[in-house]
Length: 234
Image (tube, rainbow, N blue to C red; front, side):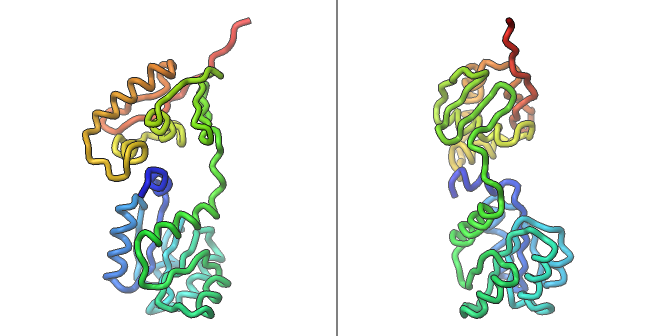
């Protein structure tokens, strides 16, 4: 999975509703490896009692309540994206599930890559579009052109420096771990030393020239600190 997909997964909660333990464990393992926060239940009643997640993977063949009925009840009370996951592949079954509130439909068996792509797709449809320009105090990042400015002054960054800064600017004030930054800005399967990050952070601080903008949270990672835009003197 690419860095952008990893970033999208960071705070997404997925509820797996599957009565087959083997299938459930496989789904949970794959989703957690992809960066999602995952809970799993075996029955419709447990699904209806669970805290509302961002995405529900809903097996339609549950032992206590028909999955389509669970889908209908979930949709009546929740804005979660619902993906019906079932062995029923007939068009009539798909139509019923979609009419009762499912956002998508997956027929077993399916691959993990397809499932992850479906999750990303339903989230894109449900979540508001990300702004093209991220702002924090004097800092502005244009995600379309990948340009950065501080108080209107253009700052030339390398691709890695831009990606690193984007990780922090996406949620100012939130601590982003060293591992999360490396996986997003370098590679989702980065296994090298994390010290390479310190070199890039030091260079980024020098180029931005804003004391306190990038804070080190020792033992955890980095975050954007609270800074004020400079005031022009008359």
